Image (cartoon, rainbow, N blue to C red; front, side):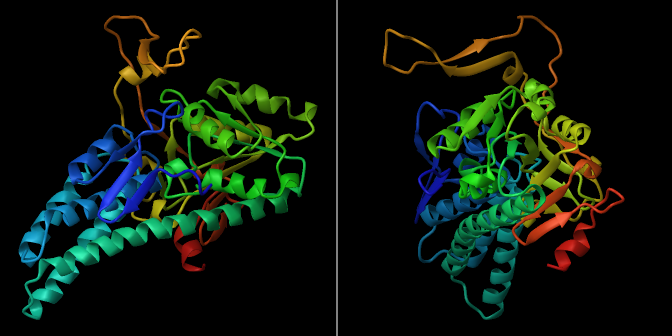
Length: 385
């Protein structure tokens, strides 16, 4: 969807849409320093693994364009960028795209610094320009990757289920707001929607406790006029159990991912694991849609993926706009839904779905199908594309 985006980049300025205010308000905020990028990622004003990586890189690009000018030395730029990339890496722990982007910028800085110093050149602005161009290339790459994921994913599902009469369900938000544009799992749904006969209906989960599904995915689907229904996370089993009663039964659950281990174990928004179990029980497809940058070949399995735990207030409270029939003014509020008092609240932001529950992993390079023994060989699969 070209009309919706999580970010706007016009040198030297980066703006992001404050996703904490969606779907009721569209407010663009400036992210022109590493500190403001860190805050935006940490507080989830921007979220979604691909978008986090791109915003982190462009946030640094904006920072150095505003900070440095002609006459700055190579060592000044190098030390500054090593410090800033390390700092941004502390914003959120699970999305591997963030670390991939920061490692790439560090590599560019180290290589360019060595090249310049070995040739007796002490112009730090050369490094600045190289880093900015690299960050800009990540923006373009992500958009192209997402469109390819949409193509491969829709082709895979149509091949398995025919050209008409099936519905899909998705979890969390994996669309234009979670990426540089188009989306991963939602990109597959967009590609299916291009030909109306391919897609019966879309169901999206509320995605508690942060409600990315009801706030963001429902918003994207509504704006793009894709026929959908919003359901709570706890309704999915009953929904799919009624498949035989509908003309367009749910044939696939499609999700994104924040990190995929070498064996195919997948970390995604909390609630994904239970959806995979539901898909297994009812014999429907469970599809993971990710760019290759979300696959972490350094980790043997999902037990090694760091899981972020967030504040208990996200579970005990909820935020939105107050419904006031006597006023056209939007009034935002946070309300308490749980008892006051001292008790435990457990709030992991992600869970890990075992590889043997995943039908296929869709990347921009192609579709990786699970082996008959229930495993993935991602190293060889990626090497053979």
